[in-house]
Amino acid sequence: MHHQPSRRTVLATAAATAVTASAFAAGVPAAQAAAPDRRLIRAIIARMSRAEKVGQLFVMRVYGHSATAPDAADAASNQAEMGVSNAAELIAKYHLGGIIYFSWAHNTRDPHQIADLSNGIQRAALAHGSPIPLLISTDQEQGAVARIGSPATLFPGGMALGADGDPHDARAAARVVGTELGAMGVNQNFSPVADVNINPANPVIGVRSFGADPQAVAALTAAQVRGFQEAGIASTAKHFPGHGDTGTDSHFELPIITHSPAEWRRIDAPPFRAAIAAGIDSIMTAHILVPALDDSGDPATLSHPILTGILREELGYDGVVITDALGMAGVRQKYGDDRVPVLALKAGADQLLNPPLLDVAWHAVLDAVTSGEITEQRIDESLVRILELKARKGLFRNPYVTHQGVNRAVGVRSHLATADRITDRTVTLLSNPSRFLPLPRRAHRNLLVVGADPAAPSGTGGPPTSVLAKALTDLGHPAQALPTGTAPDRAVIDQALAAAHGKDGIVVGTYNVTEASTGQIALVEALVATGVPVVQVAVRNPYDIAWLSGVAAGLAVYGWTDVSMRAVARVIAGRAAPTGRLPVAVPRADDPGQVLYPIGHGLKYR
Image (cartoon, rainbow, N blue to C red; front, side, top):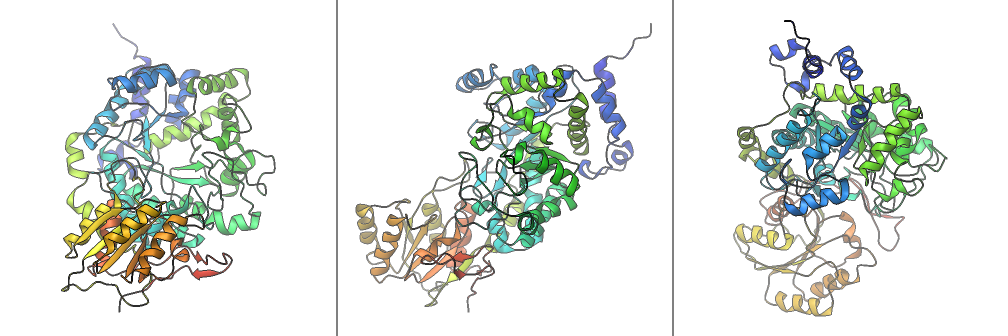
């Protein structure tokens, strides 16, 4: 008796052939395979139910280290927020197209656990009648934003790479990060940050950006796109149309960008143009107002003139557009959680990232399609882009990873050496008037390391004062660590002064010093007054030195994770040369309209 193939078999066969067989036969990596056949993709879509189509648009969080057996507390969180116990149930209920990993959701304990979670998620996606694998994503920008920590290889963030300024290094860093993510089953990275950070007061981008020069940012953005492509994973340029010139955080408010259209094209557009030219896989929207581009009062995520008129039509981008997280205040101020995802799709988005109430958002989109507010043809356009992306990354062929692959790729010696080598090139010497640095190699200096100990991203090390002190000690300069925090009071300052007695030098780590940072300023002033040479290290924004006078040397390292602390120790000890150059200008403290140190400033040892 002749049996008709099942619906799933038909879909699986079409999906598996969506990327050319000839590429596979030739051994071409999935990321470099020929573009998938759009007719086959459309054949898959034609057999999908409306609910399956809507589900493919959503990329969602889930709590737990396992797809089927999370800890009790994580299962309870899933029930409270999404009405399911685990990732497998979530995928089955909503036919999701993607999952995003967070350390705070306990998804990223260690590389082998991550690989197992990824495999469990893919099995869940393929176990309920759909042959369509998931995009598994995370924010592994490096530096200030890294969801996966050690033993994965960690690099400094965007502004540090901007200080290095070498596109080859930026590309190499992305290739290493992408290779390790791919080995753990993470196939979409929400990086690089393409924002041009021209506002020193920017509270949300800052050191995540490559810098303030649009052309330099464009070159480094394109380089990282190519590095991720070489690693075989999808990359995401963010946050369109540009989040670099704001003094407010879109997680909590709705920022307004006042650039004219000409200023936008000169400042904000070049990195996105470069990313598109490099073949960027996806672009993330920003929850910001840009009245010169759309005067409706809608944030860019919900703006048809911005997402369709500018990104699609003016810039010619036809790839995946993903929203920034839909739980952020910047996108929720004007409309309810039921309208936001609908309006984002109508504006031109394809993927809807992490809505606060998935059931509300999912049903709102389904209802909008059923009622005709959004046509099924419009949804199909997004599905074509999403499924083509999955096909290009080889996910229809094989979405699974192995423990052997983790062992071969994650945190291996060559990757760690690359990270150290590149990080050394990012450290910037801003001031060294008495040539106190570098410390002499043969004459040991007894040092005190004080300063801020900001919380590092989970698994990325710290505390920075202790890591820096140990690194200096290992390099022959015995160092005592004394954390003093970001707001030291009089008692803490007195403790630091007592510890400084008899020392040959003091290294003080400062963190985002402004006029309001009275404690950090007073600490540095008191330590300078002891007569012991003070080396100031800005461990996040490089602007701190403008507020601090009398230091024997000032350095910017743009990050406070272990890899950056070890690099600055090598520079202080003279084991590495300070070759970094400022990727942003440092304004004067007494007159912010004037520049203290321009873009490109950086001293060398003589």
